[in-house]
Image (tube, rainbow over all chains, first blue to last red; front, side, top):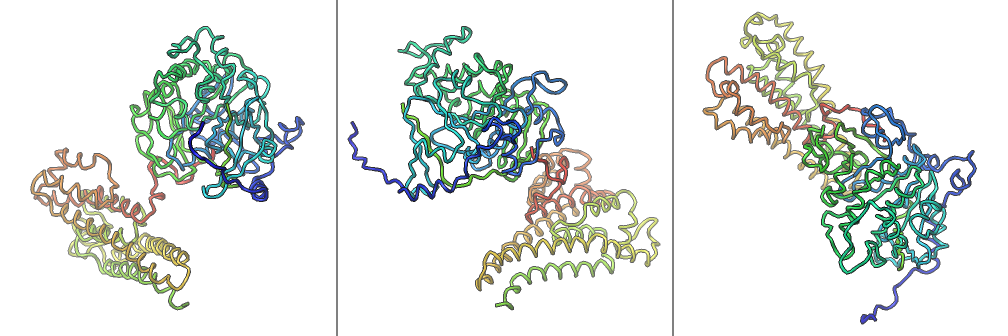
Amino acid sequence: MSTIEWGDESLADDETTREVLAQFDDPVRSTKQATGNTSRWSDARHMRERFRMPAWDASNFEYEGVIPNCWEHSWDAGGERIAGGTDFLARGKPGKGKSTLANYVAVRMLEINNEKVVWRGSSSRSEWLPLAPYTVLCLPEGVDVTARLESKDPTEPAVKLSIDQLGEIVREVRRYADPVDLNRRVLDEGTFHVVYPDPRLRGCQEIYERDPEKQYDTPPERETLFHENDPANHWWFAWALARVNHGPHHWTTWICDEIGDIAPQSVSKDSYGSYQKVELLKDMWVDARKFGLSIFLFGHSEVDIHRYIRHKIRWRIQMPGTANPTTASDVVGFESIRMNREVTDEYPIGKALMYNETNFDPFRWKDMPSPTSYKLKIEVGR
Amino acid sequence: MTDATPDPYRPALVTLSEDVRERVRELRDGLASEDRVLRWVQEMTIRTLGRLDMRVYTDLSRQYRGQQGVLLAALVVPHERRGRNRDLDDETAESLRERFLSHYVLPAHRDAFRRLRADATEYIDAAGDDDSHAPDQQRFIAMRPALTELQQWQERVLDDLLAGFDERGAILDWGQDVLLATHGELDKEWVTRVHEEESTVAVLTGETVADKRARRLFAAYHILPQFRAGVRVLSGRAGEVPDETSDKQEVNYA
């Protein structure tokens, strides 16, 4: 029992709620993905029109091996291209356009590869709101979900939303039972999904046990690696494993903002087995590539992220405001680097440098503003 | 009020124009010496905010290589002309000087003027009301000291270089001044190389006529273009300094 008298939180009245909801753009339910009618525009096309994005054109780039290779996915690539899923880590300070770039890349993945895009939802952030009208929101079934809109001005009262009211912001809310169910039944091709993890981690241990090659120390005083008391974030490790081992193996992109939250450099063998799970993610990285799972990570800096993961990432994006590395020793997992000058520290927001071990290529992306300054907080109860 | 608004920014533009006009007049009569040509270009570099075409610098450094070049001969007064240019026809020299002014100096002056003009206008718009006078004055002062300071550093660097150094160690001190005078637009190991390379040290510390000439070439080739880069960065056009590797055109959307 709480010993503190918390009192009732002040919430916005009905009228304010209506006003705030009206600030959001109406969900788009007329596209190919929403109606099943193939003669309609695809989601990607609709998004491109909304944000005035030019069509994808691989010939814009000087080096085929850098951006086109990472973003155009193919099962039998030749020449400079590699087959299967790809990955990148975009690093930059807050406010330098990481989230906008994540939205932009999501649209490109839908456009280029007709991917199932999975955005890692988190209770504290909602940077995906620019794409809300197209979003299929995936929530675990059988648990309480609270949703609220919070103003940028924290003195304004928050707006509490019911699940039905969420339907005024996103296209559809779907529920999943476990990671395999999510992958097989819930996710659609060419569609943008925001997935909130199941805090009870249902099915996670079973998925892990089904893979005889993955054996890690069980945390002390426990019998399983995954447990319902684990942080909800750990669900993602099991989801990725389920996607790789049990398919379906359609092109899938996992957009993972703030990767430092789930695989931090400081991870240790704690009572939740956090370290073992980072190892698990590392060990399945190669399989992810083979089975068409692309993992796009965003983070503040290289050192926030566990080196096991950094070793595996083959592309980097340096966001503006911070200088790009000029020696390979600054990038874990890279043996060479082609840049000999620091350029990105002077880039404006909206321009960044993508590089791998062989080359580098600057590129720009369009701003994709959110229609309102309100943040959506979705919290999933246990 | 309508009379008052343009006033604040006019002094800045007028001073700039007067400075340029003075030097244009000086050049039309011919400059006093080869050293003066270098100083003149340096002063002009600042006063055009680094907008002089890069060809001015490449052409000029060629003029100091070996025999005195014909453009250099035309820029200086007759008794400073040497070698095969000693008898350069005065009319030819005058027309060369005028072409130099009309092709390079005046367009650069125009660019600098427009650059400053845009700044001043922007500021007035922001201020909005009668008070615009006061902040705008500040804007004018705020810009001036930075350029004046750079001018002083550049003068000092050039003077020291042309005079030559007593000993190798002095080059290191001078290198720090160069950093300030170029506003940091130096390669990482620039000073190191100058200090390490025997032939360069010999030229910078030598006292023969040949050494003096080599120092002028050094100034024209290694120093003035960096001065230009420094002014461009300082005057807030860093984005426009063309990178050797990148195109002027903006990159594409990914």
